[in-house]
Length: 421
Image (cartoon, rainbow, N blue to C red; front, side, top):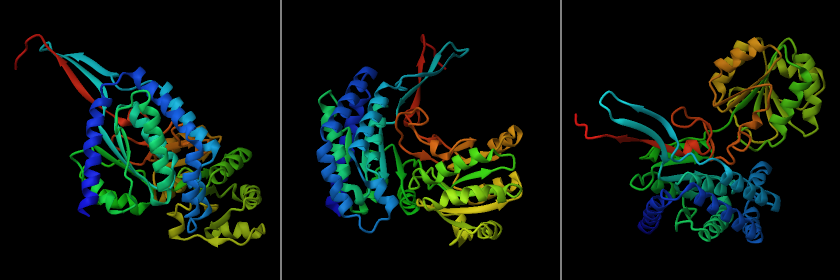
């Protein structure tokens, strides 16, 4: 164990040194490095696919959704490279002036954005996170220490190596992107207690991973908790629109955190809407777990087998073609359900009533709240951030899709002419 701790501490020492060099880079230089990283990733496509094949071959115990999150294809690698180039073209927030003012004493105060320093990111399954996290941290002048899940260790190592090697050709400081090369779970505890070198740690994954990080962390934690996302179909909804949104939110990619897990339907339109949505869901097929009222309506329509929903169902992030369905009598009941069982990630209303929509947008306390749009838009790319570190469900420092601004801090620059207090 001492050897493991020593090796991870050395990673921290190197990251701190790299962060000081990264902070010196101009915006133009960082963009040049990012373009080189994208090229380096594409150049190593065959090596990445071979490494990923090893991970997929070991993934016998994972469900289809988890394997989908794990799998790399040439198209996904090209998409990762495209995301890097998009980040390269984004405005660099570092150095941005947030506020300027002069005090009665005559001192001039300027508040500017700065890099955070060294960021630790602990994540599971999805190897594209390795690329997204590395490039967003680089763009904001931060060194990053990555610790991916054991199921993607070969893919993650290959991606991190391709990024560092590609970026080095354009001047990326050594050890700016480091991946912990072990699957030993003790590495998570060591990282979380390494406050001398890590300025913030970001866990994204299952509840147990996040709780483990939070329980050990000696530095601030930005949490990416699970996504129990809702779509509420109001009594004044356009049912064709509601059908499209529900299908997209649940079925377009069910294994991701912004997919709908619970469908709430107003009682007045429940028979008509369920008659539309049930056959559409059945084609995928989606297994519906319904409350007694919805269960009866669906059974009368001939859609079985259906599982009964219970307290566990409402709190479950299925990440699969499984959906909880509930009939509610009012907007207030829908909001109360979300506040009781949701994870404050992404929640949507479908309605033509602007007043009802305004009340929903005001009262639902989630990171992203939608009116007549799918929850699947909760994504850094869809928000125009290029890539993302994750979807923060915290309320302090960062909330929702975490792009470049969320990876910065700030400091005050004070200019005087000899003032003393």
